[in-house]
Every structure is written in C-alpha cells, then in structure tokens.
Length: 404
Image (cartoon, rainbow, N blue to C red; front, side, top):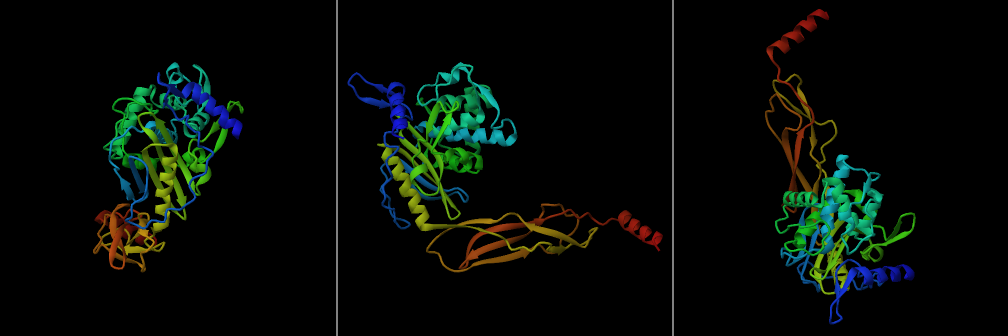
C-alpha cells in the first residue's frame, strides 16, 4: 500500500502540481492524496437538530435524496468552482446512456487526441488507445481521470462541447439554477460554477443508478492487466461505515470539495462540502454531516395498504367493478424524536361511471402522524372499463339467446 501511495504521489508531483517562482505549490488536480491513508476523526457528531456543525468549508449541505429534504445547510446556494465533482453530472449522463442502451459496459471506446490532452488527474490514455466503458468508468470514478471522462463524453455526444451542452440541459431539467458547466472534467475554467445544493441534487440523481456504486465503493483496482493501479480519492470508502460514494474534487480555485453518499438502515444521505481549506476539512466535514443525519433522522417508505384484488363499483360499464392499485409508496423522513402511530385515511371517488381508463385517479390515501399530514398516495384504476352501449348490450342479449 505504501508503495502504491508513494508511486501515485510521485506522478502527482511530476504531472499534477505546478510550482510558482516563489516555490509555492499550486494544487491543479486530484492528485493530492497525501492523507488518503489517514483515518477520519473518531469523534461522532452528536449534534441535535437545529445545532450548528463545525464545518471548515465555504459551503455545505446535507440532503435526503428520496424526499429532496435539506437536513442541514451552510451557504448552500453560493456559486463556486466545483473541481472534479463536476464529473457527477458527467457520470449521470453515462448511466442514463447505458440505461437507454446507447452504451454498454463492454462498449469499446477509442481515445481521441483531445481526450488525451486533458492533463491533471489521468490514466495517461494514448491517442487511438481502446478501452471499454467499464474500464473508463473505473478510471473516472475511482481515480477521477480527466482523460477517461472526456473519452466517455465523446462516446455519447461526439465531442466534449456537445457533451457539456447535454450536461447543462440535464442540470436545467433537475432544477439546478446555480449551475453552468464549461467542461466535463472540472478543470478550472471561467464561468464553470455550481453550488453545494445543486451538487447534492445531481448526486442524489446519480445514486439512483445502482451501477455507479459498483465503481464508487471500490477502494483499489487496476487497469491494463494490472499495469495501472487505481486508488480511490474518496477515503470515506475505506473509513466510513455505509459509504456508497461518491466524488472528490480539488483545484487551486475550487480548493477541496467532496460529495459523499452513505446509507444506513434504509436511510440514504448526500453530504456536500465545497471549498475546504485542506483535504482533511472536506472529509471530516462530510463525516460530521452524515453523522448528524444518521443520528437524528429515520426514513420510512409507507404503503397504502390496498389489498390485492380490491375493486370499486362502476356504473354504466361493460363490467360492474374496476380494480384499483396504489401508485407507489410514500417516502417519509422523520426526526427520531417523533412519536405516535402512522395513520391512513382512504377516500374513494363516488359514483364512478364508465368509461374508466387504466391510471385514472379514483381515490387518495392520506397519511398522518398525530394529526399532521405527511403526504398522500394516489389510488388509480388498474384496468380499463368500457362504457356499456346499446350495440354491446344487444350483442350480449343475442349471445345469451343462442346459448339457450
């Protein structure tokens, strides 16, 4: 392990850092992993809801992605340079391309000269080198490789510029109003900005894709038949229970950034820390946020308790009843201090008349706790019921006569 770290640091010093005339070092890539083998602070953050956490960063947010509820925030909407946590959006588009069938993990991508020219964190792709999407994902997620990220973007959109346009479109769809991407890697560029809240939103969207966790939870791996070693830049993967990802970011402008995701007892959280002064600040800050969330909240997915086969009467239809179903469960996030029983009140539509179409809303289940409304679950028709017309009724009569 020490040899791997020493080897990585050597390349960082050679390729990832720049030294000014005065001798000061400017971090210009993800290669600052000098503390990657140092455990996190052991003290758990036991702060109660409403208390202030000591987070040494410019901006921070804790989000529960299923409900979209912000559990803690500090300058959450301030526009800041994001460094390589930019790649969260890049990876989201890759996951969605795989879902559509545009790519598979075994698709072979040939590296362009542009992709190979990225600098910063990289796996030193050579122009014309062929690598599978699986291996490029390893490189981009685990080692934050800029060349691999651009190669994936070009495979989807034909060029980095086209891919960045898709990134900005997706950001707009997700309501990320403080975000504008200029590249897909996170290298410093004028106008390349986002906020901690927006990063949390796109992180929550990314972890809906279970495939990403096959990469973001890996501590060490290799490429090129073991010749290229990868070490995850997110040390929470090794040192924090329940970590599922996600992405670090470091540049001289952005300083030290992190979007960290973790899951315990069905509660999944996204903690974002931006512009920490040191690498340790971002990891300990994210740990404090996650500890705070897990210590204070529970997540429940509440069903409507509609029995299978339940039907409602239908008037003037080709059948007397229509089947119904609940449209999913209600995701509820509650403080652990909350007490009482969850109650459901179901109200169905009266005088349902054909025609009825599958998906028509026929009722609502209202979920409450101690009289306070937590949310509603729609109840819809699970089948079509056609209107009973004279020709249809006549056909039934004639059919019955011939069967006598």
